[in-house]
Image (cartoon, rainbow, N blue to C red; front, side, top):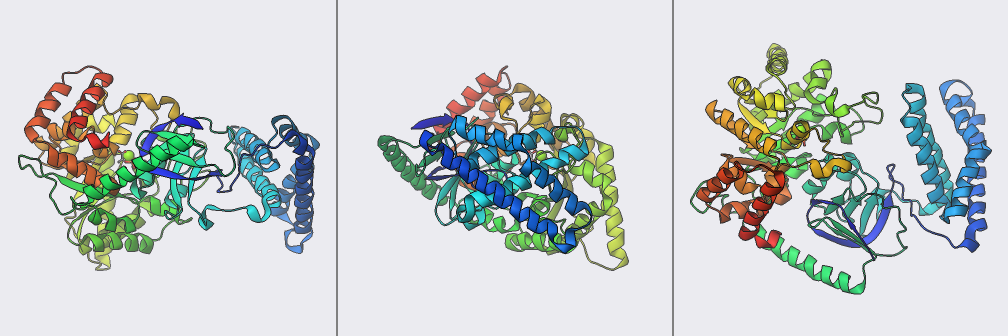
Length: 578
Ligand code: PEP
Ligand code: MG
């Protein structure tokens, strides 16, 4: 039994067989071999190489690739496959570390690919893709029919991976993928956010998991405590079975809150909205008792389809969510690509700091064709319900004015063709940088509403990459600087007479709900599966208690003190959660 501690990012317990996945969706079991199997394994490797070479020769001699770039690419592949030192590196790895041929191929090729990818020369860094291709080719010959991709699972599994992209996670088949655990990532990385939306238990930032995972073992992913247990003993397995049953009961009890209002004991009504990435999640928002959609992350349209969405793709996706919501509000955020949400490999690969780079609204303001396509669809759906548009990552007034000017341009285009839209559709912004927080009074004059994106606000305030496991302990909403910024944004929104919500992950953190209410927040937007728990907390407190708690927190000077204080308060109210 091996117990690993990481960061809990999506609650729940998953117990199933492990499936080790690499970044290309291939299943690469890390299996050890006995010393006596060494030469048979090297023989398998040789066979895979010669089959791959035969296959390439066949392709190369085909008529249609006699010319040009494709032939060059295959020539590179062939050179690699025939390179003795390359093959020796793999056989040495098998011999010395006693691992299977497929694991050795995958590991060595990934080392080479990441070396190429890190070289600051576009031509060389692009060669990383060739290495992946060679790896794929060799693995096809090694794994043969055993090769499985994630789309064709036949049994329940928990996924173990170095890292997963948000797109991979969003594509999981929930009937079979019961949970996942990754070596990298942080609580507010988008992979974690998608896991929460899907309701899949997940733990990230586990560090190197390349220790042997025994064949046919079971793995427990405890998304409440941030623990992964590989090959648990019988007692542990029994305890977890009981714990998982208790959790199911707890979730069932919370489900009974669905029809009840999110209202404090002394009668203050709070609005709980859902964060969604795909239109089909809208149903879940209603099922869980949400009052609307507070954040529709539309960039997943770009991440999932494999190509840039058309105006009709946008229209259909938004129309579906709006139809489900009927007359409830739907806040559609314009595309927020970049940082860890990359539509394809190589997207702005040359940026040294993508989080500080050409992402989100900045990208939209440079690619007006792409931006206007989305805005046209957004305006067209505005007549279908209570639709509001929200610009992400606004850092100053000029950016907001520019974005609104483009929106007006699109309105004029629609006028020309007499296409109906709601001219007074509310236009709001996300406050997720210190810059916008500090100039909130100015921005409030020209925005219909604010939504605080605490994930990015924390990242930019504390200078801590939200997806970097090495600094994850520094990423905290309980830092006094973050709390003071949040409070001043809330006050500025109130003074400016505009609506305010919180849509970062803090809004679903049971420990923070009382503080947010005490600081004056009345609208929360969060992953749909978390709605019942947050509602339960709201229904268990009085606003007077929350105000008192907030006043006290604002006098504290360290995140540790604040965190402990909030945790104690929340545990008293809802011990089952902790
Ligand atoms: C945020 O930054 O808090 C937010 C809600 O947006 P995203 O997580 O998509 O960056
Ligand atoms: Mg953000």
